Image (cartoon, rainbow, N blue to C red):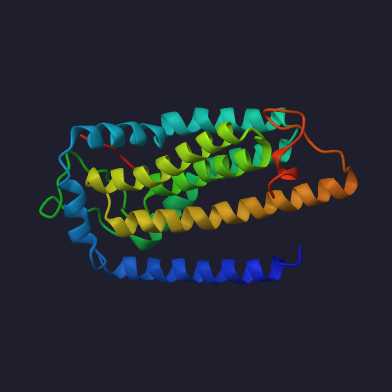
Length: 237
């Protein structure tokens, strides 16, 4: 609680940075190094790399995000954290709206066929990448709740490593598919991180309030003691 004002100030500075980036994206179809970096990524001709990105792209599609969100919320409910489960569902469900608003305000066009390779191009605007925002928001929350509730270090580390891979590789896949510039992906990460940090702070406030009212610890996924006591043609966006 003592660091609350400092965090709020840092969050507002980060928000101002995203607003500035959005203004620049609205007036520039590309940022410096966008074209060069997109070509370097698309020039990678390794079958294993392509298959890995295919798998990652499936992990951030709507048909996968929805069941992953529901499963994560259900596990959090098993830890007797109904507010945490509600946070996961609300943040994930609200993500398409934040992406749509940002895209419609900024109106940055998709990468054109004369500059990048793609099999088909979505009709929506390009900045920010909705897949990148979705990845860092949902899998960032999974990373956080694994830290909070999973005591087994191997299980926790495995889940967190998978989350990090999906976030990073999911952004690379958006550029590899030719649907986004690297700066679009960065913008999606940026917006998703702003929402993610806010939701985590809200959950920490819930935990602090619950511990004041009822100091009995909640159950973890793996034991009855939470981990917090021990460690503070491709795709369419």
